[in-house]
Image (tube, rainbow, N blue to C red):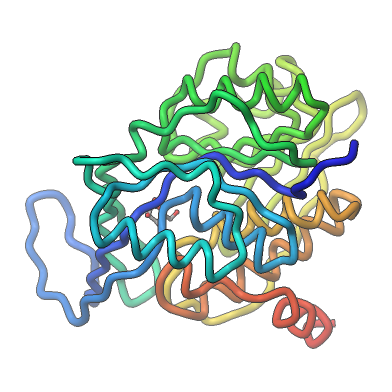
Amino acid sequence: MSARHDVCVVGSSNLDLVATAAVLPGPGETVMGRDYAEHPGGKGLNQAVAAARAGARTVFVSAVGDDTAGTGLLAVMHGDGIDTSCVATRAGVPTGRALIGVGDSGENSIIVVPGANATVEVDELPAARVVLAQLEVPLGTVHRAFELARAAGATTVLNPAPAQTLPTELLALCDIVVPNEHEVELLGGVDALFALGARAVVVTEGSRGATLHRGGAGNGAGVHIAPFAVSPVDTTGAGDTFCGSLCARLAAGDDLVDALRWAAAAAALSTTRAGAVPSIPLAAEVDAFVTAAG
Ligand code: RIB
């Protein structure tokens, strides 16, 4: 299909309020933190930035509030060359916020307060080869976006995060599903997704890499996508970097396995830096990293 954009991302935009601590607190616990920082984030924005930095012409469907956080996030989108014509600014509504704790081993815990993300809606979808969504905006919006994407002949990719059960009507509109191990269990397993029509399921496994399962008989255990060795300082946004990079490479015509290897490299690199959006690498960095890794 011919499309003005390579990738359309439908999703959230957040200001991330990040505290680091040696160990993350458990329920009922208080721990002393070390540093505090604010970064652009949100699963949708992270994925849109990852697609753009991977070289895709990217359009974003999202919403921010009419506050300084919203103005700042729009500036980030423009800085990365993302088409913001479908990013709404909602009067009197706060921009989404994420309260994030990051521990010394790079792991995180996140509470998202949706704000303007709860108002994201889709009437028309910009033409794109690949349409990518996650679940920090209303489910009805994701459903409508995928209906429109399917009608236009685009490939639909769902990252079902944050984890939740989903209506089969929505899952039946997904060409490729990219869950983590917990999310795929909640969705009933890989075979359930194939029964609903998915062409491929990519289960992300953190530092162990990812496994690609393809629909059809005889595909056995799937293809393991090996991890790239790095020393992580902050894993926030690594899954988003993986999804956005994957879609950019698919839109560019890569085979699924090649696209996944490149996305795994981008995600690994992102864990070596703090923050979500600030950690997402440019295509040239990923290319150099892949070459150096052999
Ligand atoms: O996936 C990481 C993202 O989750 C953070 O940037 C935060 O905003 C939450 O949406």
